[in-house]
Image (cartoon, rainbow, N blue to C red; front, side, top):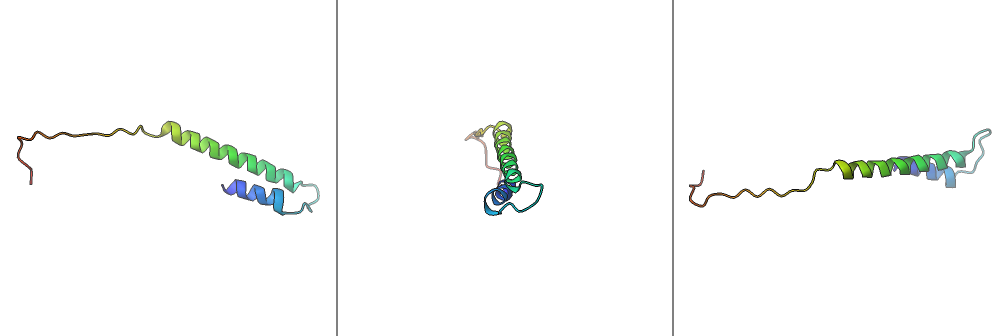
Length: 67
């Protein structure tokens, strides 16, 4: 998110006045890298997340309570 925000500021909010450096191009590169990083992060979370399994432990009703 940080790279996307900085890239958007460089791309759209700052007038290009630096000599030899294209600030809109650097902003676009930062936006692309930030979006790719976010997509990879989401993909990583989805593939490595543990499967949601509900464990039900049944107790024998004939057992005495432990308290």
